[in-house]
Length: 412
Image (cartoon, rainbow, N blue to C red; front, top):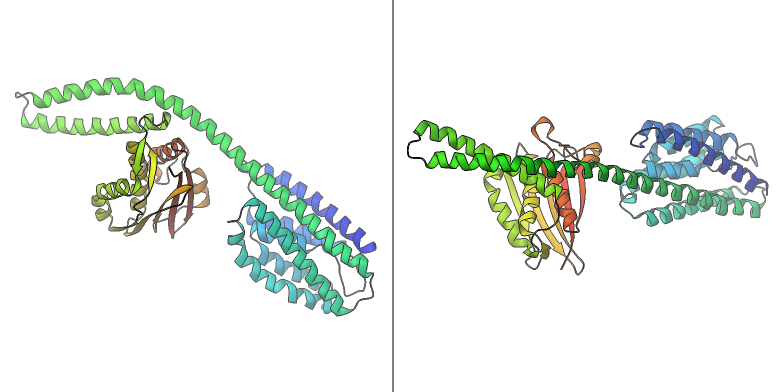
């Protein structure tokens, strides 16, 4: 069982190096690892595989090189580069039959990983693990087929056991660990965000109540002065401006109260098509100003149970943001679809889009993609209302392509 012993030694080295890579990555605040760092660590893994490989003949190297390529290709998106690195490293050991076998196997893999990576991350964690293990078995079988074609004088049972047991075992350990780390990181981020939101909610509620009382009094006196027949035309103009600004301030306070108290005040059936149609009509002047066409595909039979006013406030903010993300014009689509369990509302624009960092911070207190022009309060309110209605928000965005908001509510 000489081959199997070499493979288990290879696997031990891989796990040790991955442990150090994990510790190193954990030093970053966002627990991230750049593409170049990923490439470095995977290259170290490949070098260790080649360095301690089993050589039944001078031209044949048997090791676990497919593990770093597979994990790096599926989980880190660097499969094409790693496939090329495998071929280059193997070239240093001689341009023989083994080298050309590597070319025949890993060049198609480079293209495969390039195509499969986006699809892979759309799958659920369990399916990602199963797919990784299945792909590892396929690679092992292809490698065994190449060895059979070369008709090497090796222990067949040892070779088959090594390739059909050790790589799937290693892939299972690494992929399950990766999914656990990813889930832990997401939970950690949620806890941090929840802590921030709790502080902002308490502060917002306290400040809003304190400001609203004098603001109401100021609005009352402005109204009295506007109705006074002794007030001159010039003063009426000034008072009208003051009244408009007070209304704007009251709306901001209302947003803060909605965010700090996301509970639904009035629960009633909401006809989604009617409400979204009303919101589109309200935003028609804004869409004309930005030369944005709004296209709707709304199902007539879509109903939710919630607060109608807050539902309008939520989607008013989202659709308005979508329109403002297209300063040179564009198209915004609103679509609804429902089944027995959920009702989904999709708002899609082809505006400026967002980076991954912006997506991760969307809905955080005081964070706005508009820079100094925005406060982030609008999206904070959106997330707060959707949570209160037991909904889920999923956002996809690409810079220069656009953004898609997907709201999933339990249908009633």
